[in-house]
Image (cartoon, rainbow, N blue to C red; front, side, top):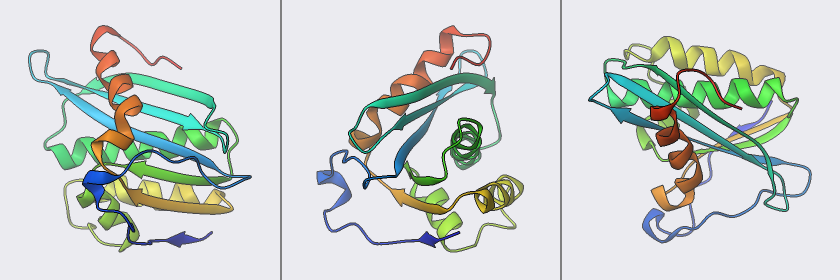
Amino acid sequence: MVIEEVPPAVPVSLQHWQPPNLGSYKVNFDAAIFSDSNSVGLGVMVRDCAGDAIGALSMPIPLPQSVADVEALACRRAVQFSAEIGLTRVVFEGDSLVIINAITNDSGVLATYGAVLEDIRVLVLGFQLVDFKHVSRSCNAVADALAKKASTSVDLQV
């Protein structure tokens, strides 16, 4: 397993989505909070090196304690979904700097989402290549839309 953090060459505000390298997949994840229903939507979008959709996931869950908890859960679901569909070389992208930094720096153990981060660290052991990157919201638009779609769902949609 390789986990690497490379600082973005372009400021996050100017980024746009780029396909992964040949032989790899890119998995974007996001979460949306629905305060009126005390729930959260998780969204995951998987694309290949040509930028073609390989899979997508949208699911509602009960509202956790904090936004960071929500983003950690979205990341964990993205890693789980990638494993479920048999991916082994994956770049995970999310717009939560707190969660991406916690994963790449092996920190956050004492945070409320520490157990979720530990789940992620265990799950990625099954991958050949793993990279976690922080991206702007504009790079995560499809995952965000899938997360918002969960407000009209009662269960997981793949």
